[in-house]
Length: 506
Image (cartoon, rainbow, N blue to C red; front, side, top):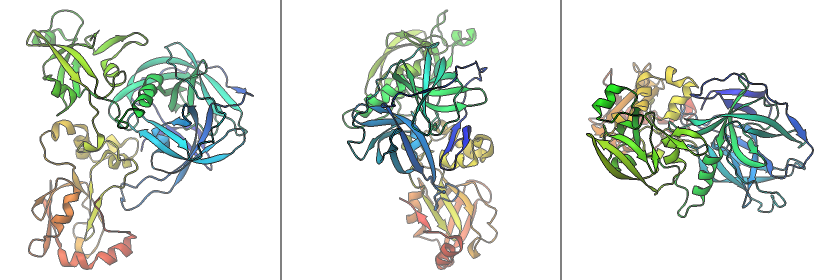
């Protein structure tokens, strides 16, 4: 999924790989205190052992080889364990292990949110955590000394001190949206079970480790405010509904000319609204492109889009709207439009990732595909693009990266639910001359416009004059497949290429 930085090398039973920090300024590593092994019984943490097996989006009929990962998870009230969404992504088996005795029990995922990279798991045996003391949650401040909790092979608790250097918003692993991240400077020890680990402050849970760069000794941590929001939302009546989004893009108002153009008064306040997500919270509130956003709630917005948080100082208003509020909350706005001040109300909602034309993540779900005479049709997703590796934005087909990056603008009024693509061609008697085709958008099959790949089945049931006509968005424009010949080849295709089925459309 993402290019990760090795934390402590590959182990025979666990790939302990963490992605390098994204969009974060590199900081010089400061000397960190050595890790301290403690003889105290670690009654607030357990090992989490996971077997993962993701789907192969280049060969969507297959899964990749399974692999194992280990982590350390804090015990929460109610007999639950907190861990990262990345750890349990595509999990086929989970178990909890007591550090001191090695006793194990199967576990299940109760709630997972890949956007905030958090998950709650619980043991199948409700009595497994009897005697464990649940952790409380406490926020930290920049300059505080925290501790990362790891476990030795013999169950001894290992505490590594870490300095909290920054609390700001950065992108999380699987989504474009940003949430707060604590950045630490620490010298983590090469220990088993640190794919993720709890970070504590004065004995309380302050965050969950999600990325570590052993070269710079910088760690990215999911902070207490994000954890608290996730846990509270998980208890909401009606089920978990995620983090709300305003659906508003804005530009700083530092430029005096832009301020004059927007008829904004002199001073430091306000940001210029540049785009609104269709049917998003901002659009429904009545915001318009060209408005100047002056305040959210009771907080003034500066010209960079920040407000003054009582704990963290200047922080983006995205933190105030997405983390300090919940879906359904109503937040008053003060805006400037054509020099006149207006008051609006923002009703916050969560945007379901599955409703996007190009899904930002499709974890744990089998990708849809359809093979016609050897022509492989799929739906474009970011998970497909990530198959090109951590540098996928440079290595994946440019047109697809462009569609993904600007999908809100490109598909704003497009009836498509998904972008259907010809991903590759399996050589066969039906595909002679087409073998080199790949990475092309498919617009129609047999005259039927494709809103998603689910439309392919009905379209393929009606060949035109005995042929399947597959229309493409670029050269060669279309390809023609003999319908009877394609049907006759189905058994041979499955045998020759080891295909369990020629289509998965659900």
